[in-house]
Image 1 (cartoon, rainbow, N blue to C red):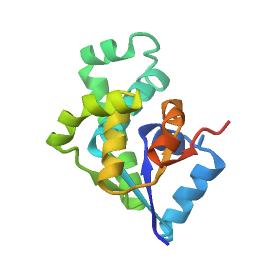
Image 2 (image 1 turned 90 degrees about the vertical axis):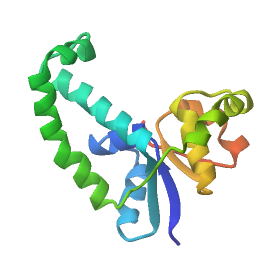
Image 3 (image 1 turned 180 degrees about the vertical axis):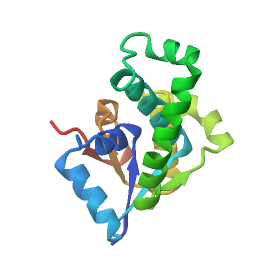
Length: 163
């Protein structure tokens, strides 16, 4: 069948931390057999690495408050986190054969119109634009902002939250 499923950053984080929904877990499992083709963008991967850095900064290095501000001053910790994240992120992307879509420069000029059309903003707009570019109809996300626009966009929202 090979359905294309777009992975929002939130879904990847939940999966990596074992907190993904049953449906989300099934999508990842079925992608290994080729039933689903998993896709995301360079922007989502950038966001993933940033958020995982913050999570590790808090959980492993005890930087509970003003984590990003503290990490900017602790280059040695950032380097350690990078070393820890490299096999996790790269291994994940390779194991699940995730296709990473580039953000096109011309898409950026379309964002204000999409914002006006849909009432969402930021990376969510880039996700919608990337999905449209490849005719992707399935979005695995924990982001509730998409719930208001899923039917309008003819996108099936798959809840990644384990609640």
